Amino acid sequence: MNNIVLIGFMGVGKGSVAREIVRQSGMVAIDTDDIIESMENRKIKKIFEEEGEPYFRKIEARVAKWLRESVNDTLISTGGGFYKVPKLQKIGKIVLLDAPFETIYQRIIDHPNAQKKLKKRPLFQDVNKAEALYNEREPHYRAVADIVIDVSGKDYATIAKEILKKTAKHSE
Ligand code: S3P
Image (cartoon, rainbow, N blue to C red; front, side, top):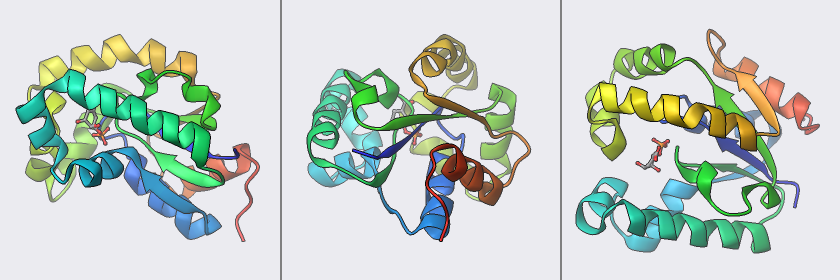
């Protein structure tokens, strides 16, 4: 399979790190939220509003099965709840992007498009609820990860390089 799967909490930087890995390695990349939005032809926020979370999780599990059976040599970034899909580790090397909740929240609010970034995330509407979700998930993220990368205080290029080194994919 040889895939790299980026997991981690909302806003930790999975998408930005994925783009930097692509730049450094030439790998092809896909994102599970993007796949689901194109399957459904509507935004994640709309899917949550119109169908509810359990419907979204079922599609995630379907995407996971497809990734497991049909995708190779690809960098896969995922939504923050994707770590729960069955047989996650069969998809590829699981890389957790890890940072304290305060760092993640600060990173979102410092972004020029902060409001947009928060609005599109149905599970980040209330900061206290998001923090509780973070605390609940953190041990589970660690339990499924093959590699844990502490991303605090590092730029995307450094994080990408570290991931490529640890997964033995060398930059060209
Ligand atoms: C979710 C994270 C989101 C998206 C959906 C649910 C979660 O992805 O999949 O809103 O359960 O943490 P990001 O991690 O890219 O925000």
